Length: 257
Image 1: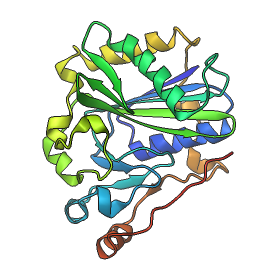
Image 2 (image 1 turned 120 degrees about the vertical axis):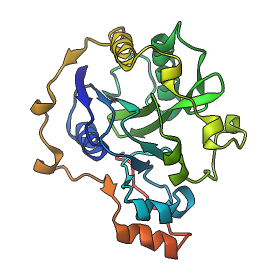
Image 3 (image 1 turned 120 degrees about the horizontal axis):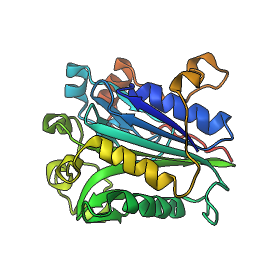
């Protein structure tokens, strides 16, 4: 597995690299990005802006909103977020069926080893949680020959940033209609430092793969390739349209089959 370590890389650029590697590479990859430069909202491919985002303050404060290429929910990420992405060919993990639930269960076992001895880790529905409080949100995309599983880990978060997000209409049962601040927790309250988490994640991956560090400079910029990214930075006009049409139709992306 090729390992790319990044720090404070803008999440839009990270997502475009991920999509390129999913669509254009045949190798296995892990990308770890320790924080992103500016607070940014990231939505799943079929998310509806008006249902998920408090649009007026987002426009007022100039908060970027990205619609990524994969499914999953909506998050706001910033310098306190640690991102871990796994991009694999379907035969990379022996016996793993290339479907959402088996991939999710396998990842839960992987991170169970990472957090062993630190906290009461659980895979709850599609989230990573300590006890019954979420600290990691996941998204996936599965193509004909490959899959991607990417996670936003809340090492820390800014309480005021959570006000840009609405309470989702669809929520996991274990949330029990709790507000963001009662539902989420911070990894920094359980682990000694960010580097410990990153080191233990690499060690857990090494139990499944031969991990080989790769310099990000060796990855061709997605903008300079023939691959066209479907990850989109929404414009101010896109956001204003959501205000005027709160039931805007979702954007649907077909998985490559």
